[in-house]
Image 1 (cartoon, helix red, strand yellow):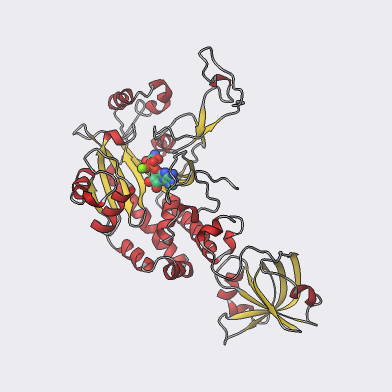
Image 2 (cartoon, rainbow, N blue to C red):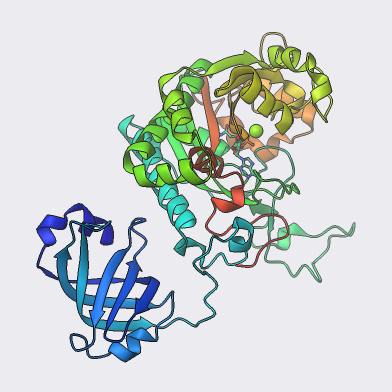
Length: 460
Ligand code: 4AD
Ligand code: MG
């Protein structure tokens, strides 16, 4: 690819090579022309020099528009004076796909909003090429981190019969004809006639299944697509997003936080090393100070407060907020951002939330009011991680489920984990898309997703 060509310029000098790519710019005089070609491997475009006589389709090439796909064969010529270390003098240019003059990506800078309307062409812009390269490298870093620590990568199901978070924000999956569904005697939709013989949905979290795997492998993680029918039209919510969910046996909340911190630092470090050009680009064009901030995060410790302490801090500034703050309230994005941006100016773990605002599976603390939950908040976004130590005590778990009206028979497999060699264990979910926002400084989740699916949008 073009990136490796530039990295090893000397080795290619004078050699005949073939490259495929898309036209970024093209200009020509009577008998000589220049094309800037990109193949997406880096910001650097390859200059292709073509002249009449050396290629036999000069006329055809001069008529090409930006965006056309070409395969170029020619000689590599070093250009020590120029911006790029080499160019290619074409002997043959094959037009794989011409592009119309109304190509939507013109040379000017387009707004991210406009580019969202053409998601199929976005990756050809510098910004999105950089975002999606970083996204790919960050995903690899996640796998590398867990593999080096001996975690088993577990594939948890996409279609599921249980609502892990208990928030009722599931997308139903059904084979029934919902225009005219079969009904039971009392008029309800008869789910026993559905494909699986019961109601199913797209998963909101692989956690419950990850817990099963952790009770066999000790250390596991999932990394997959997750779906939430949350009706929140915000810059940090997507209906389809990617989540990483490690689950560790023989571990408590402190172990969980240490794992989260090490993972975040590892991924930041890896991306900074592997994508220096992209990170410099984001620093220059999207978020001045990004590089310095990320480097600081790698070096320094994360802050830690309990929910109760966080509420006390927020209550002192309650006039600054739109939403009320009181013990028992669910922290809103404005509260989370205030804590991490104004109070601590670094990532903050908030732990021990009231049981009422957290899911059924979290371990009850001795105060019987709070649970061993943890959220990680970061500047610019708010929550990027939600996790907890799990309730391993069967009697406590079933009591909590009864309080919440969850039926034991629906979770019998999950309760079995507490019957047959259960142990204390903990885990968390990292929103991958939010992590990519954090790394790149891009402020809308839609702009870190190749094909964003948010409430009201499903063009692709
Ligand atoms: O806090 P959440 O809901 O936690 C869970 O799902 C647990 N079962 C995780 C676990 O303990 N294994 O979600 C975890 C993270 C959030 O912190 C957030 O980063 C991300 O998932 N997230 C979303 N990201 C984008 N769009 C949405 N609609 C999201 N909802 C959650
Ligand atoms: Mg959460």
